[in-house]
Picture 1: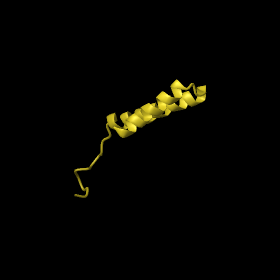
Picture 2: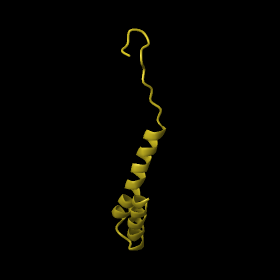
Picture 3: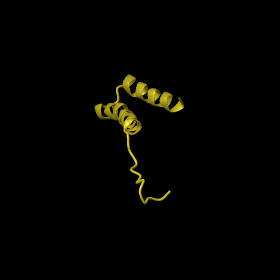
Picture 4: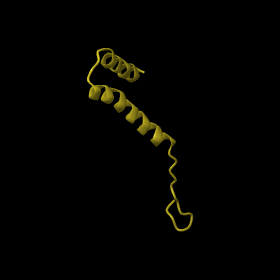
Length: 57
């Protein structure tokens, strides 16, 4: 909860004080990239192929 509040506060300050275009893109884009990465990892199904014959137990 603290991290989310911190991200929103920084974004609000940059938007309210008209930082540069690149600063605005970085402040809005980087948290979105991290969130997309976390969601992709959470929603991606990976399988572990364990052999039933002759495999270790």
